[in-house]
Image 1: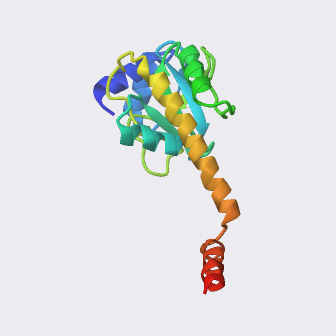
Image 2: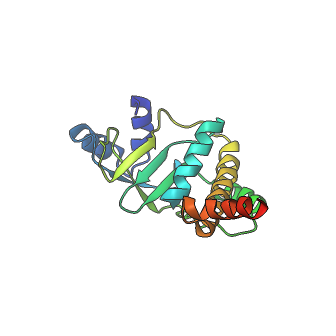
Length: 182
């Protein structure tokens, strides 16, 4: 995390000076920040979140900081404050099937890792803030699109895994076709 990212994130705290002091004493320490003033957060379960993160990254789509909570098995995507309406609108356009996500209300609290978490810490940055994110109306659309696509992809993978639980289960029908033809 850069100094500008740390300043922006700590400014979101109810007591920014206390937040900076805590992180100066222990840069690994998690801290609870209020949602809605500087940012909103959409959280999803780990598997869908990791796929969504990967798709956003590989496709070069705009997205902000991303946090991982190992214990809760959730991924949190930061959006600009007051992005809920746009996010929900774009998500509804992408899928008719309701997706499982949480969008904490304004004034709720989200726990973020310190500026230098280590492997094994409960909270880690997948993408730490490097500066105050520039308002971008495409972020909610990109997140909604990739979230819906990732959920559908993983649902298809699960259906395939149920149909073919092992390589042998996949190969057996192919083997039977070749022996019946010969």
